[in-house]
Image 1: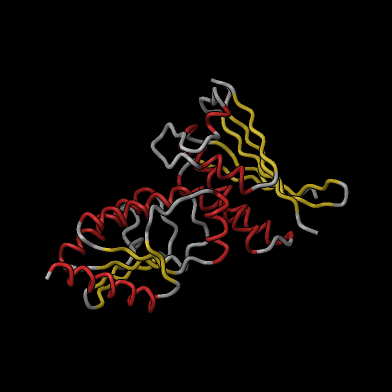
Image 2: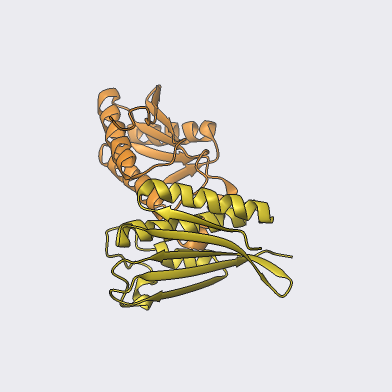
Length: 130
Length: 134
């Protein structure tokens, strides 16, 4: 039987940015596929920013942390800023006690603040170019 | 008491099962959302440790009582290669499999008690406990 085709994480485009919401538990294969999908979508859409929503994730362990950090690094190499949204209070507490580092990924409380944060970043970058 | 749940851990998919089962029990026992998250995250690391280093094993959950305090006890048991240097395995930054290397040490910090028994060739048993705040 063919495996998990419906196990896909949608990636949406809004203006210059991509928005994705992780709502199913990530495992190794899915995570790798998700990373590839994201990078291809970035290339295709020439996006300048990426918002990853983790509201639906109830456990952020060392594996998920690694995947998120990798996504931000890979996107960064393609010139794309990543902002993480939807990090719940209990997750923030657990991450700090656990001692996990998000490797400097920017975070925002909700989608709206993430969008304005990204817009500022992009404007700054454009300003320094010209 | 006496209620004991066993989750067979053989693949990555079972990691999710293990933490859901443990979280449900913790919730039923009256642990708050933050404690449930701490416990589920610790279990996730224990189960991942089994999958990555031993291939398969079990996660065992039970309610325990000490004096008048209830607690949750989780055992992660495998018959894998074992760990020769427990102190090293618990230190941050140590990883033999290219993961983040904070897994077990982090799990220890999230729980009230953490014990590990292991020797090369003899598998690994990790016991963690969290007590219910009164």
